Image (cartoon, rainbow, N blue to C red; front, side, top):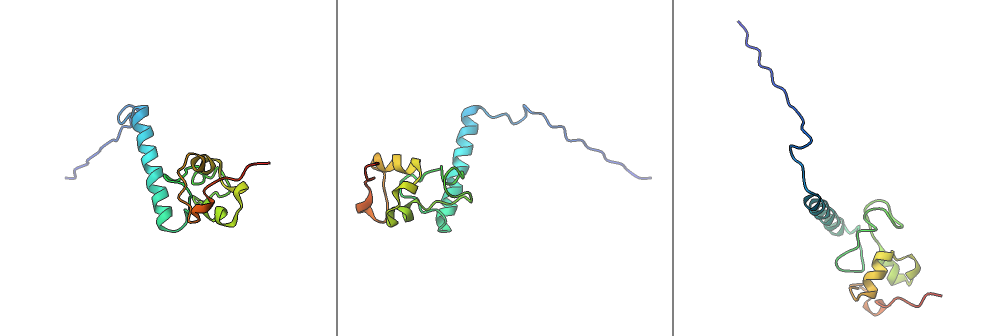
Length: 108
């Protein structure tokens, strides 16, 4: 005599429903951890603290979860630095390895 065991998994969209605040906190935490990992791998050389998210999300020059805005500052290529980093520099959050360059030149 054989025994048959059957089970069913029912998905309910309300089972693990997160509030907007919970979801936002989880996503931002995951993004921060991903950027920290990229920093450890030397793929994220942001010039502000906390680091920008724009570059990681692929919304600027790089689309592979990297940032090289600090390298651009060191080369004097301010026009290529992402807008989020420029705003951070203007707010005094610059941590560039070339600290004397923590001032954005006037735009023409």
